[in-house]
Image (cartoon, rainbow, N blue to C red; front, side):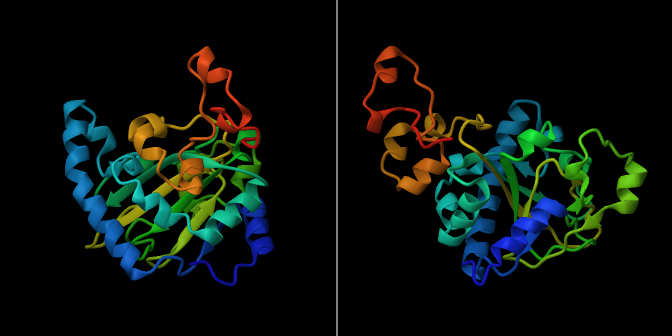
Length: 262
C-alpha cells in the first residue's frame, strides 16, 4: 500500500512539526469494507454505551473496535506501514487502542476538546497516534486540528482562543493516513457540511506500555493463537504479564513477555 516513502522526511516532520501524512495508502475496497463494519458496529456500541449510562459522553465514538472485528488490524498494518513503525520505534510495538469516530453534520464528540494523549514529552516518544481517513477530510467537515510544534513544549497549555487561532486543520483524501506525536495539542474539528466524516484512530506504543484494553483476553487466547506472528505482536500476545508461577517459569520461547519486547 505505501509506495515511495521518504522515511527520513517523515521522521523529520514528526520530530519538528509533530505530524506527517501519507497519501493514497488505502484503496476504495478497504474504505468501503471499513465503513460498512463501523456502521454495523455502531448499533452494538450504542446499546452498550446506553446501558452503562455513557452514551452522551461517548457519542459518535467507538472504542477498541478490533475486539469485535480483528480482521481490520491486518488490513491496516500492511508490510510498509509496519516497517515504518518499526523504524520509528527502533523495535517492536503494540496496539494501545484501535477505535473509530464518525462525526455527523453538526454532530459532537468528546475529542473536539483540545487535548494531548500523552502525559509528558518523554512518554510521548514511546507512542504514536494514527488517523486513517475513510472520507475526504476538510476544515468544513471536521478535519483534525493540530498546534504544530507544541509536542516540544512540556508545560505549554494553550488557551482555547490561542489554539483556535494558531492551530491548522490537516486536510486529506479518503485513503490517506495521518501520523502524529500524541503530545501534540490537537482536537477534532467541527462538521458544518452535509456529510459525515469517518476515521479509524489506532494508537501504537512500545510493548512495555499497558494497552487500553487486554486484547488477548478480550478476543480470546483460543482465537489469538491462530493469528499470524504480526497480529499476535500487535495484540500484545508477546508482552503479556504472567498470572501465576507456572506461567512465569516457562522456557524462553514460551514466556508470556518475550525478551525482544523492549
